[in-house]
Image (cartoon, rainbow, N blue to C red; front, side, top):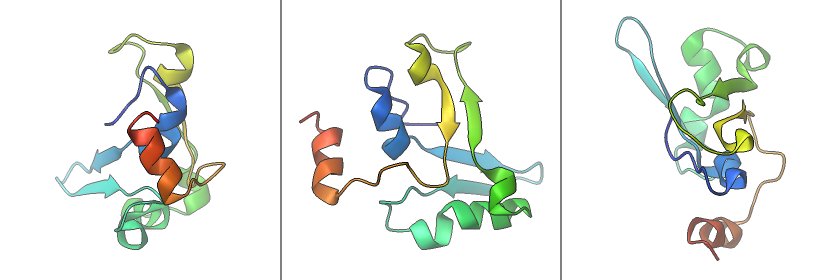
Length: 99
């Protein structure tokens, strides 16, 4: 997992990254809805990578409370196949720069 925001957990829904590695070394980096490679590396592609249906993969629950300290809503949550609300490009940029 990467881009975990402990100060503003709302950002995690839009910017948190997830990478998986199979035992054979094959890896997959999940693209989020705003990423240019979303069609190739989005949630449906992750399900195919795992040999599963989308409904069998998402939501992905996480709990990183043993390795980082922060508010419960930042260190525990779920990754949905798409966020509850998709932000516009301007909204994403404003959130990313703290505006």
